Image (cartoon, rainbow, N blue to C red; front, side, top):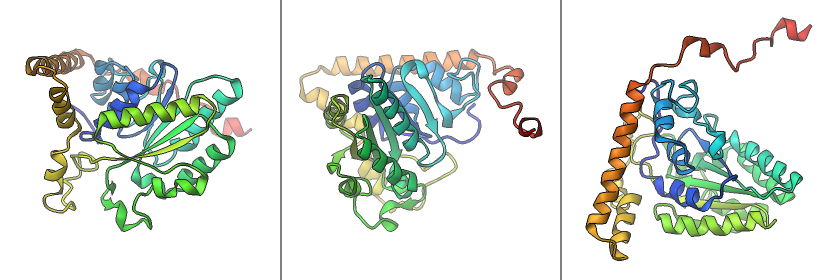
Amino acid sequence: MIKGTSHLSIGQEAVAAGFGVAMQRGDKSFCTYRGHAHTLARGASMEGMLGELMLRDIGLMRGKGGSMHLTSVEHGVFGSYAIIGAHLPIACGSAWRAQYLGEKDVSVCFFGDGTTNIGAFHEALNFAAVWKLPVVFVCENNLYMEYTPIGDVTAVKHPAADRAASYGLERIVIDGNDADVVFRTAQAALEKAREDGGPSLVECLTYRHSGHSRADPAKYRPPGELEEWLKRDPIVIYRQRLAEFGVAEDTIKAIEAESRRKVEMATAACKASPSAPAELLATDVYADGGWAWRN
């Protein structure tokens, strides 16, 4: 029922969860096309997110954006971007607006390891550092830039953190599969930005369980790599932590059951929703951008 391509973030949920809980209302999120978990973590409805993937009228943008362009201004999600690196300068613009107006919201920009070899990455970091902007750059290093291992085409081991010093920033590398570690790191970076301390660059080590997109069987991965990372699934790690802190098994199972119930209810609501009306195609587009505008 989901048409077209999609890029799943299964295996990378701890990054979205840790930052999503640490961020305050009013903070701004800028995501990649792998932005489903980030959108949910900021409070957008499951029906709205899933409905957008299914191109239904119930979707966040009534099905017009689809999987790669999730947006919910109400919840501070200022877009998922399909162009690699395009949203880093936009996040700088958002942060510059907050600085100029004296507002205390922080812009948080999520991107993959492949973005670190894009010019916009370096331009945005330099601009943010020079102006001490309230922005946090978060690299979700899942080891692969589309189908290519990031280590094969990058001169440093940690593509984001090892370049931080070039812009006067602290080198921060964390376990991106541990939601508590992500949360504490996010708290510190957000507080620094909110108190006029300038930007931060955080590299979260994580792994996507699926291929780059639904069209990618990921046969380029070495044997056994996925199996090793599955042992460090963020949900597996956190489930074990709850048990270690004395949370009863029945309570954990109840959380799982409630989560599944929400998914099933959202799925049913989206199936029942009609597709977006055809006239929506002609809304929110430039209708007067040709010869008439130039003359």
